[in-house]
Length: 286
Image 1 (cartoon, rainbow, N blue to C red):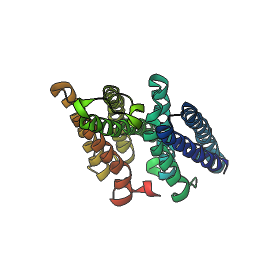
Image 2: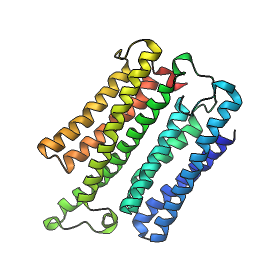
Image 3: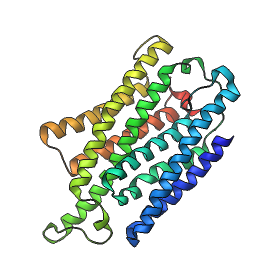
Image 4: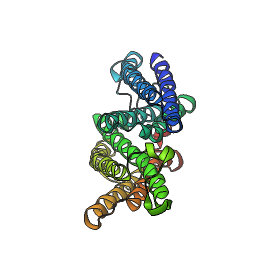
C-alpha cells in the first residue's frame, strides 16, 4: 500500500530529525538544528499525506465501510506520532528552542519504528462496536491530549537535568556546556504547565466521548473496564498536577516529576492495558 511506503519515508525523516537535534547539542551548529527542523516538517507533511491516503485506501478496500485511519493499534500509534510532531512544530514556532527536539522527536521516531516493524498494517473491516463516529471523536481528543503530555514529559526531563546541574554549580550559577542550549528552567517549567493545560481538557473530552461511545456500543456509559479505570487514574494525576499548581504553587522539580509520572501512566493506559490486561479495549492489539 502506498500509505505504508509513505509512513516508511516518514520514519526515515523523523530519524534524521532526531539525530540532527541530538547532534545539535554537542556541536551547537545552527545549521544542524535547521536540518533537524526541516526533516521534522518533511516527515510531518509526508505523514499527513499518508494518513489521508490510508483513509482513501480504506474506501478502496472496504467500499462503504471505509473509515478514518484511527481504528487499530497500528493506526493509533501512527496517529500518536503525528500529533506529537504537530505539537512540537507549534512549540518550535513559538519558542524557537531547537534543543527541545532532542527530547521530543525520539517519541515520534520510536512510535513510527514500532508501528512499521512490529504491528499489523492491514486495513481490516471494523467489528460492530467500532462502527461509530464516536470512535473518531474519542481517538482524536485522547491522542491530542496524550501528545501534549508527551511534550510536557520531554521538557520536564530537560528541566530536571538543567536544574540539577545548576544546583550543583557554585552559588547556583547557570549551567554551561550542552546545557546552555537548553531553555531556562523558568521557560521549561512554563512549557510543562502550558502543555498540561492543553492536554488535560482534551483528555477530559476523550473520556466523555469514550463514555458516549461505550453507551452506543455496549449500552452503558461506564463499566470499570481496565482501560476506563486507567484513563481515570491518568485524569486524576493531571488533575492533581493542576490543583497543586493553583493551590500550593507547585513548580519546578515537583511539577516536573509529576508530569513524568503522569506520562508514564498515560503510556500504560494506552499500551499496557491494551496489550497486557483483558477487557473491552483488548481489540487494540489486533
